[in-house]
Length: 279
Image (cartoon, rainbow, N blue to C red; front, side, top):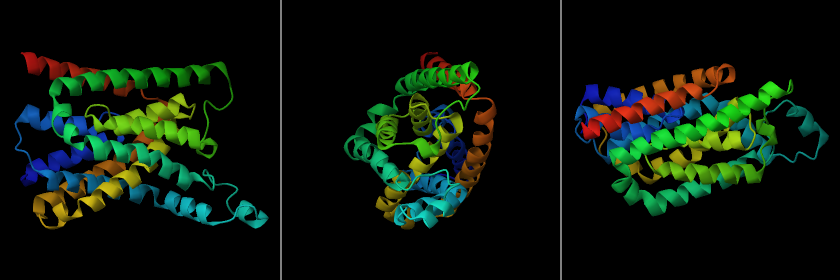
């Protein structure tokens, strides 16, 4: 079980790396390996993810209210169209998110044992950090190139997302079962490849996090409740706080700068992992 200091460190790492496209699972494998932390156990891992769930729900609760209302209302009526005419979502956004969640759920069910053992090898984490970071860099450069050749909007918006986009992004999310890939990173990358603009790709990625982490938290709630202690509370608090701040400032950052910097961070971290492993 983690002590308070370890809980705070891992909580901050989880909160930041869950939403930045740098791989939370990869960081939670590598940092304890680098600093020789004791394994805090499954219950603590559930607590950290619960913290990030609180962060994304707190930040996007207004969006979820709108999404729920849109899914319940019959938008054929003129008055309903007027009410939500300025909404960034469509009336089927909830069902698109539900469909996009299915591949990740199936990956978790069938590959969980591998994710907890073989997939956690440091060299595999390093490879995924570099490779999927490079793919994100490529997708972001494509978005930037499209922006430079036209004065129009440099991508599609959340209102433009169709079921085929959601399925494509959901299939990409399933790959995040392998540490080092980054759930947010690969779903943002998939969104960019579907011509979403940078902010819309990130927002859809964060919304997509909610149902899959909520489901996982419900399934493992017994581990959290029956083993709850002060370090877990610290982990939840700092995971939630750092996660909320990561969402807030990432959305502002990528709108102006893009995702290139995250590739370089992933590249450097991968190089450090390989260096420590061999030398």
